[in-house]
Amino acid sequence: MQAEKSYDVLLVGAGNIDIVVSGCNAIPDAGQEIRVPNISFHIGGGTALSGLGMAKLGMRPMITGLVGDDYCGRFIIDELQRYGVATDIAFSRTQSTGISIAFNPETDRSFITHDGTVTAFTLNDVKGQLLSEVRHVHITGYNGRSNHEEYMTFVKKAKQANLTVSMDVGWDESGEWYDGIFEVIPFVDVFFCNELEALHYTRKSDVKEALSVFAAHVPVAVIKLGEQGAIAASGRTMLHQPAYRVTVVDTTGAGDSFNAGYLYGYLNGHDLKSCLNFGTACGSFSVTNRGGNAGFPTLPELTAFLAEN
Image (tube, rainbow, N blue to C red):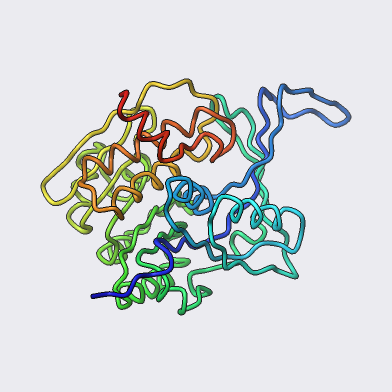
């Protein structure tokens, strides 16, 4: 019998700051000023948003990573801890905390981004001791050839530590969509991606065909479809969960909120259908408020929402 672990999930990457500018249809020319309805300041980044969501659902997440030795870095750590996320986050003396400015969250968003410490912390920097304190690890940010070996080394190490692993692949900025991903995901228990990522990696034109390709390599594959909900496959079982009807305010972080809800179900022993339902409900909840986490539900709110729907 395994000893009780201190934390449910280790998430790698401390995140960044999202500055969300609402109602801005154009960048002002030199010397001009544009007034907008709202500008808000939030924690951003997939792991931070997923970790915050898990904590709101009563789980015990731990986040490890790096932030700048600045106001933004301290804000991130303070907010994570305020919501019950444990942190093993270091301060960089040479780089500032990453910041992303998002315009028009109500429609098709555009961004201005400074990576800062976001790209300075890698899976190679994760302390081995942390793997002994958790029962699951969640990783993001696979970038093909540039960090393939890093991912291979880490997922093998996690499996040797008898941990379950989830992975959200993320967008490939190189445009190569390196097929080495299929060497990594056999060591992953739950694989997440969105529709475009799935089609690019599998070289398929149909999302269900893409899901079948992933399902042949990983125990559980999930493809997030935005306003169409999500589909998932485990073995020969394939399920679709439509999105819930809600008023959309800001889609920032919807996919990361989905991950948090799905992993809540997975780590509490629920079946595929229930996990997909939890994920879709949390993703739907998250778009009802500005910022990636402000709309995320607590467990009582999620339970009541699902009972009504």
